[in-house]
Length: 141
Ligand SMILES: [Zn+2]
Image (cartoon, rainbow, N blue to C red):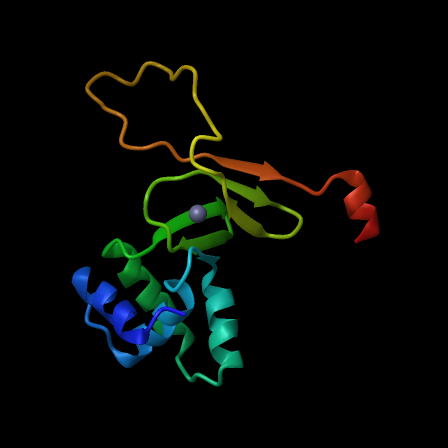
């Protein structure tokens, strides 16, 4: 378990003041490589008897995103995840389970890219490979 003070320092180093509520949220999201939706974070906070409001959770996640503490990943139009791994990387998204997982670095290789529009350069490439449970697995569930 990463100590609270280490997490507080990480938040501070991104220019965000580590208030009690921000730390509570950060202790869920930033202690390990993790993908969580705002709803999951809220549910975990409620389980731990936290009284942080839904609005505060959303505001804090926006703040963390703006300051580069987490990355937003849109798995589909109504599934937004917050990723504690901030370097660009690719994902699998299971549409049956709603689970987002990282694709290992180097496991997805591009042999060619399209010519970029004139006057632009590539900033990063993020791929989401959408998967669903194979038929046998779906029948069991
Ligand atoms: Zn990720």
